[in-house]
Length: 389
Image (cartoon, rainbow, N blue to C red; front, side, top):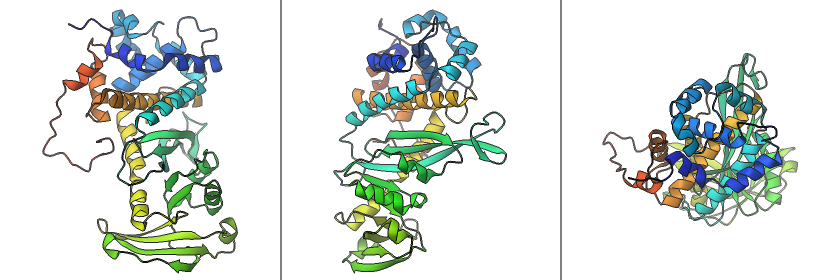
């Protein structure tokens, strides 16, 4: 019989404690904290994410039911609903934001060589946002409509490993395109976006910083053709042109040439037009790169389905941001575990296994290796294939 630490303690040991403590000291998170530290707060919220707890009372009841095991799981403070609520409301959410950046850097190193379906050596990102609806009376700091509140998660996803490298939490009124002003642009990287981000002044900023973009064109875009390249229509490509914008305003916002690629999607019977500032990649690669943008849509579906980010344990802005960043940390923790243990399981399967074995004494490698995946013949292969590497 294994006499080592509990599964939850093994999970927390994967997290770099020195970096976590540095984040806590940076914002004085444990100032005057007597019995419930930031480490205890993170552990409680991580437990809630791993085991799909519904409320603070649910967290308190479940943890107190295994109170003799809490010390061995890494908990040091006494767990109570009011104490956790106060911590979520008052402790600076930037503690967990900074710690998430540490986990992002670690996860990206592990997935740096991951293939994502496009023959491309450059880093490729997908940029998009998702909206989480809220009650305006409970969340007045996040107005969206006249009688509705919402928060938006603006996300930049590294397509190698589907690792979120940038997330900004804003009220529902903030337009998605504004996030382009906050990105730290990486020279040589590709930024793949839908037509909601079509702002030529901001796109020209990406161009001047030596980054590439791939974006859907609007149907009424005014332009003049400067050159055309030969194409192979059997690949689905219908045109490959060098153009210049001719509108009186947009021509000043983006004064240089663009590449316009027409592509026919046979699967969905529709014609797509892409704009890019890259003139070297084959047109089919540009089309394939835009198709991989769908990964961020699947990422949003996955986290909403498997993590607690659609309902919140507190109503304050600090509590919401704390919960979201700890949820992202748990996602990264599972992704790191999958890679370091060399598991063939999907992230959803790993999360489900952890949820029912949190306080068991089983080595993590043994816990995942004893699981035999037997897919159902009725399984839809198109259902959330994001993490089936």
